[in-house]
Image (cartoon, rainbow, N blue to C red; front, side, top):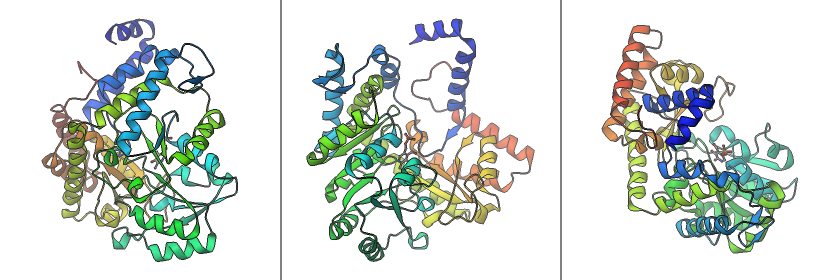
Length: 422
Ligand SMILES: Cc1ncc(COP(=O)(O)O)c(C=O)c1O
């Protein structure tokens, strides 16, 4: 890797400097975007390997190109590790990322125009769950259910059943990008069974927490299909995986290839295999437990200062802060203020947000990345205090400058996996 870096420095100093700058940025600040993480050095090695040179259209033993001795072995190991870890009957590890994995499921299991009952986007659902701006929202008929933010984000399953009876979905979809609670998958399954719908859970965000068994596994409730990204709480390379019952294996595989994609990115598949090996170890379970503890500690520190968190707290790795209610600042201004003190967050719509997505009412915070660096509950309490001070004193440049120095000094005490000589 280092030899390659020297070559890059010499050949293309512009790109080399940008990579070095990004390394410094990732080390200097507290990363609180809940969908981000620091992957393992072993995964970085696989990503930067010669596997990127190889075309492997098809599946192990059934490829359209020769020379698959090693790629077949890698993909088979990745699939076996995925099925074992998630208690799934079948795994497809080829989706290039989270969005194509979901598209492959819809197209593989449904027909265009079919109805999918999915979480309202402002209550936590993802773009691929049928946002009008996404192609999926144009191809399928997405109908929305909501959570009750004033009842800790509870989902009213009687209302969901009534809605399901009315709209007759072909699929009940649960999953989220900004919902701070766990799901009652068994209750979703009962609703789906009543109306004869398929069940799909998109656990893109919480894949690592489910793998470590610190959050519920949808397969324990009999779900048909589960999708996850590999780069969020799972801490792997960018990518997606589809896990499903055996009866859907053929449809899912042919929907991924040749339905949606061409050649899989075998360097990523190798990275996913390494990630899945790591995720089965006790160290990863400890990491997942700590991620949840850190989220609770950060939420408690913020709420102790009077901050409004959507649903009043968190049961997973993320939380959504109503910055308008808490600080009279919209989400963009809050995000930019925290950027100035090296705490990275993202602006976020809140349930039924009256504001537009680029100037929403809140921000989203999460603990997966900072837990990877070894931060604990006491650190979360400190960080919570800095966030509140910065948002309260956002128009005081001196206060912001002092906080920025404090955060940078603090971060120097925590290494970034895969990044040396900062
Ligand atoms: C729930 C959920 N599904 C799917 C995706 C899409 O993943 P990607 O960005 O890798 O396409 C995301 C990404 O944030 C997500 O949160």
